[in-house]
Every structure is written in structure tokens, then in C-alpha cells.
Image 1: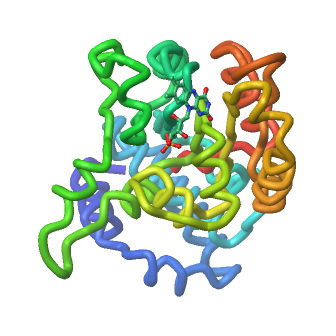
Image 2: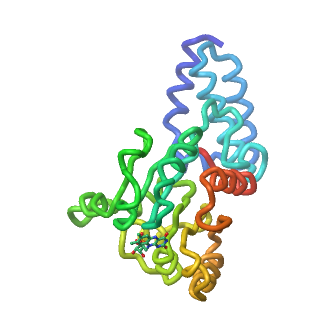
Length: 259
Ligand SMILES: Cc1cc2nc3c(=O)[nH]c(=O)nc-3n(C[C@H](O)[C@H](O)[C@H](O)COP(=O)(O)O)c2cc1C
């Protein structure tokens, strides 16, 4: 196929919108289009055009056959560079918050990381110790983010952005608030707006006296019902490496749709 004609097809197909694609997903038409686009892709002379047509053909396949290899994990097989997982890490006012920078660092190796800190947590760790590429959000950012009706809300935007959330360390106070559905700061607003189809993990850090208090079990049972994964620690909070392993374990059983 000549370059000129390929370019014509490219122009035509890049203006497809989702609704148009849905219409085209009548099984026979979709099948025909897939093989047509696949053929055009094979003949295309530039890598850009080839991947453009291949992507279109696989999008059609995925839409027509949800649940097949094309659609599984929300990932197209020809996707040249799937994006990194987006992990939201949060810290509460606990002694173990001094390990928060280490936790951020571990995840930065393979994920995009954003961090949230409660006002109480800020006295337990040095914000300057966080990795440079990790942006830290506090209640102050939530206040500045929204100025007038119609503006976006930071807690909602962070909920949308994240694929997975880890609260480590989680305080007895924030655990109680989550269990009761309270939302009076950035962190608890995110949790209150969270879509529990996406994984959330918690690593509690409480003094033994607090741990033994009957509220701990009650509150942990409530968050368990939400589908939150509890990361056990031997005495206080689990070690950063154990938190990391727990996240990997969850992701192995619930792969993220990185499209
Ligand atoms: C020195 C000190 C250490 C504390 N350590 C813990 C702790 O390890 N775990 C905990 O749940 N609360 C601890 N607290 C209490 C919390 O900081 C307090 O409940 C705070 O309101 C938690 O706020 P947050 O849940 O919004 O982060 C500690 C308080 C102080 C003063």
C-alpha cells in the first residue's frame, strides 16, 4: 500500500470517538474492521501509523469481546508502554510516621506516587525527607485548591487519580473516623469518597494499650466490611518492606487496569 493512501486512512480513523466505536462493534462489522485495520497496519510504512492502526484494531476487538485476552486487565496487547500504577500513600499522627519517607521511596521504584498527610502527622516526620518526585498534599492544599463553585475538589481528584491507596501509618483516631464514615480532613474525605473496587490497604500503628481496647477490633471489623486490606505488624506498624509485599500480593490477585 502506498504512503499517500495510508495517510488518508490515518486521518479518517483518528477522528473516531468512543460512541462511533461502540456503533461499529456490531460483531461482523467489528471483525471485518479489525482485519482491515490489522492489514493496513501490516502495510504501513511508518511505525507511528502501524501502531495507530494496530491500536484501533485491538480496541475494536476488546470492545466486541470483553473478557478475552484483548480486554483482560484493561490492557491492549499492543500497547507499547502501559502507564505506571498510581499509588496514593497517606500518613497519620503516629510514631511510625518517621518511616513514611522510606515507604514512599520503595513505591517510587515502580509506581507514580502522591502522598497525603494529616495535620497531626506533620509533627512526626520531616516533609523534606520525602523523595523529590513525591508531591505531598495536606489540608492546606485542599483549602487552596477550591475557590469557587464549579472548581474541582482535591479529595475527589486524588480519588480519581489513584489506582490504589495505602494508609501507613494509620492512627487509632483515623481508623475510628473511617469506621464511622467521618470526613473532616483531606485524608478522611478521600477515604469517604473512595471507590472500594480499587484496593485500599491500611497499616495500623497504635500503642499496645490502644490495641487492646475493644474499639480497635470493632473498627477493624467495620473497615474489613468495606473491603479494606489490613496489613498486620508484629508489634507496631508493619515494616515498609512488609507493606510493599502486601501491596504486591494484592496487585497479583487484583491486577490494575493500566490503560
Ligand atoms: C507523642 C505522641 C505519639 C502518638 N503516637 C500515636 C501512635 O503511635 N498511634 C496512634 O494511633 N496515635 C498516636 N498518638 C495520638 C495521635 O497523634 C492523635 O490521636 C491524633 O489526633 C491523630 O490524628 P490523625 O489521625 O488525624 O493523624 C500520639 C500522640 C502523641 C502526642
